[in-house]
Image (cartoon, rainbow, N blue to C red; front, side):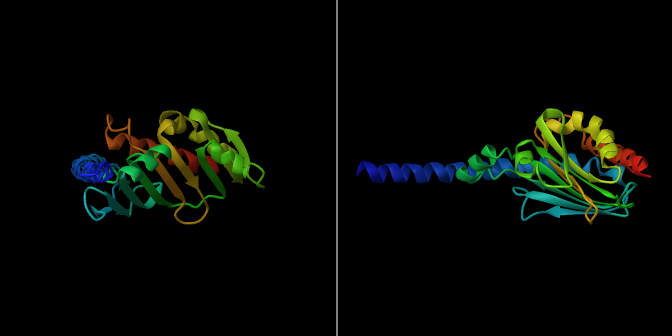
Length: 213
């Protein structure tokens, strides 16, 4: 057998084994994350519908309607890293994407401001856009805001950002529905129950609502 052919066969075998191992790891990981998330949903009250996105190896989605204040409804999406395909897994790591939770929430009371929080690298691309104002946040985050009461809202969010900012991929608060878009990496958060994460978010947003009234 020619060396080149042997290398190709060996590489294909390696990628096939990688795919199988990644798939079975993600299945177990997805089931564990889903159990973790569902255990804390009681704090949101309301009516809950949930299911897998394709399979437990990809992720899960939960819809909550008639949720407890300050929410009206929420969509919570668990997305797992693409561990099955090696190039995609490497790309996710380079982009800082891990197993993550995405929350889209509709609030009971709309706000008159907009806030965007994310990596400081995004600041350079938008720092000259008006009427956005920029400031540095904890854990290397950049915070943009505009509108009535926005600065007060950012100040009220600081304790939550101190606690969760190291895991935050992005946080967007806008006037249109869904009002809240939150994407957070789960690595490092699973030691605590999901109830704590959801309660802390709920408390932070309730505090915001009081500031803006």
